[in-house]
Image (tube, rainbow, N blue to C red; front, side, top):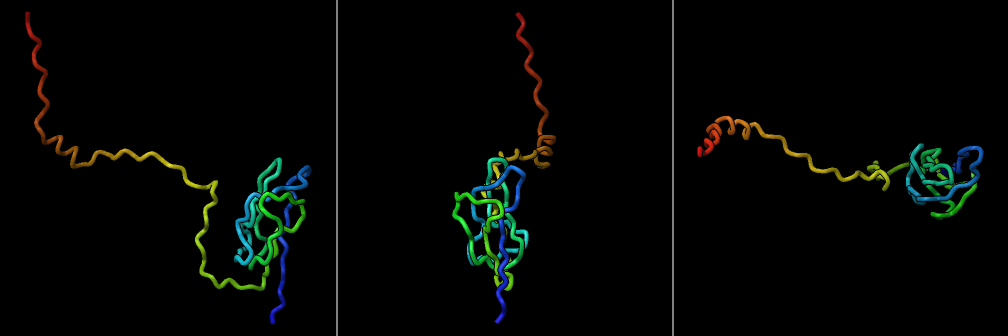
Length: 134
């Protein structure tokens, strides 16, 4: 049997005066495969918002803290089993809600060549009628 190797993902230091942060959103859940560098959780502090990346590839075996919980710098956020293998097909990235595209107005359609060529083959515009004389 393979020896399980767990890697702890901790809340990194984010500046001299930042000592804690709050969990905003877990991007992964227990049992999910995570690649090294992939965002696991969003954290907010009074000075900065941070996406905490995975420090290793593997299966997430534990998440520590609920959304809204306050955690200290250096505290363990997640545990990853690095001996696990990814048997699932690659998933398409899930867009983060803040990265949702905004609605754009429809572009006006350009004049088609057929429309402009038919205008050139039509009869020329009439001259204005002469002004009445008094």
